[in-house]
Every structure is written in structure tokens, then in C-alpha cells.
Length: 266
Image 1 (cartoon, rainbow, N blue to C red):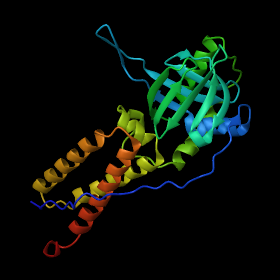
Image 2 (cartoon, rainbow, N blue to C red):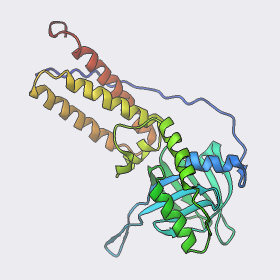
Image 3 (cartoon, helix red, strand yellow):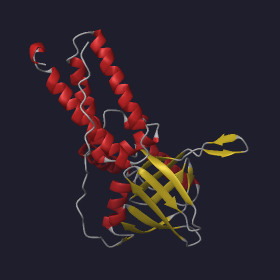
């Protein structure tokens, strides 16, 4: 049985380059449509509510930009008649107008999203996955059923191809984002930095397991990974996750480096 090869916690400071503020981009421009498709489109999980001792599941919110319809937002299969007013890339948000003409704001920051309504109400949600073909079908049907759109032809294949290219350019975590079921997994899937760190942890963990000398070592490493997952799942912010993941990468790299040496030099 190998002794624990984990150093003291490493404090990691993450710095983000300061960028000049960008002006809001009005709706109707190609830049606004592109920003919605690349930065805000996706499927979001709404939190459960409790009423009279019962759990009410609000389900999913889908957001996308259709070349013929424009902005589409739907809760489950019910279209929400928002009109895009402008986008604000600097704040990862878009401004919307509801059917009464009141301004609302949808913001997605590292997988944690919020919809602030015109009356001041705020709905929090977590990013689950990018838009898939089935999600787009649900959105279009919701808008057609609500009388908010008439679609001729099917531009979905073009949009899906663009979405595939964008998805391939982004880091993919070590788990399937389509099966993400927790807020933590949603934050990881919604952040390229966290997704890349998760993928790195997965690769390093497999390396460490490959170096295990026997079943006892493998069981020890599994327990160590479970302990770390518990710590990760206790995070409630992107900053916490960034620190926990970065520390884990450092530790696993040291473990893999040490275990790769011949036994007499460990």
C-alpha cells in the first residue's frame, strides 16, 4: 500500500485580464445574433419550488436564436414572448422586452444564469447543455403553436452545423454534459476553463490508476478521488471550483510524477 503522496494545499491566485467595456449591441445586427448563439444559447435547469408541502419542478428553459424567427425562449414546451432589445457582451447578457414592453435581462456567467424580469423578479438557473436538434425542434414548435412564428423550410441543419463547430472548439469535460444533473456540473459545462480543468483531472486520475501496483493501491486512489469529489460538489461558485480543480491538478501531477519512477526511487 502506497503512502499518501499529497502535499499541503496549494493556494492558487487566478487573474483575469482587464478588458475595456463594450457598448451594448442593438438587436437586428449579425453581431447580436452571433453573441446569443455562441454565448447564451443553451438548455438551462430551473430550480425546484416548494408549495403546500409539494415539490414543483419547473423543468427546463431553452434559449436560442433562429435565423427566421429571431430570439426564442421557452419554458419546457411553452414559448415566452420576449423580444431581443440588445446584447451586452461585456456583462455576458442580453436585454429583452416582454409583451408589455418592460425591460428584462438574461445573463449567463460561467454556467450560472439569471432572468431578471420587468417587475424585478429574478429566476436563477444552471446551464445544462448546448442546444441539440431536438431542443430546437421543441422551441420552433412552441413558437408556431403560440402563433409567434411561421417557419418555411428548415434552417436547423445549418444552425446545427455551426453549433457543432463551436462545440468542438471548446474544451470538453471528463463527463457527458448532456447527462449533467447538478449545479456544479452545470457550472463546469458552462465554463471553458473549468471544462478544461475537469478533462485534465480525468486524464491524470487515469494515469495514477494505471500506476497502481495492486488492488489495495487502486482502492486507495478511488477513495482519494471520492474525497475530492465531495469537496468539489460542496462548491457553490465558479471561484471555488476553479481553486478546487487547480489544486487537484497540481496534486495529481505530483502523484503521477512520483509513481512513474521505479519503486526504489519513490
